[in-house]
Length: 274
Image 1 (cartoon, one colour):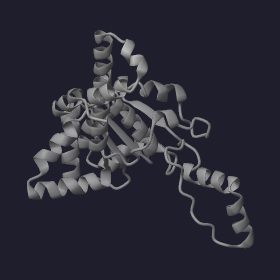
Image 2 (tube, rainbow, N blue to C red):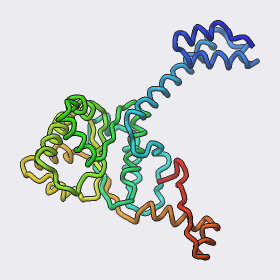
Image 3 (cartoon, rainbow, N blue to C red):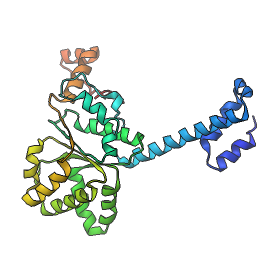
Image 4 (spheres, rainbow, N blue to C red):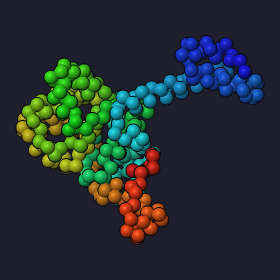
């Protein structure tokens, strides 16, 4: 079947959403009864949806999330870990980002801090906000290298201009003088203009010791913790819980354990609840 010249023109104008909709409507008998205004409305709706999807995918790719498939719709509220469901659902609206407030997520290893943070970040990308994810140890290493090779200004802009900055795995190592200075500059530049999400195994009360120098610690924490939301999680490791559920529901794995054979590791289902 020959391609309609209108479709070629739409693609040349990079109106791919409209082109796809035009091609689909051509194949539908019911579309013949639509008026010109209705056709145009359908084409415009598809183009708008297509562009929104592309912008979301671009923001999500730029965010470099540790758990790119995490979603607020897949959060597991049944497993006991002191997750405040009402507060989390409020955070999922992304209003706290619009208000330039921060979020502190604390709890033991494996309780789901990083996954929940990435779920909120993915929702933020859907809502039109820019996000940057960084693990704190690697971030400080990158900042040190950037000071030496001339990349610091570019990296600093990336960290300070995004709507939401995620600092994952804060602590327990004590910060060096250079780390304190860089963190202070980042926090100061973002204060009142962007949201910061920090995850840590350490309770907030101990962060002062991690920063080290009292003057810097007071200034940094005042800007980070003041007016911030808090999710203090507690409970068993989600990894161990999910592994136990998988083994219990897999007769083959149970049989292998009974026979003394080493069971093959089970890969979590893509997009599973956490």
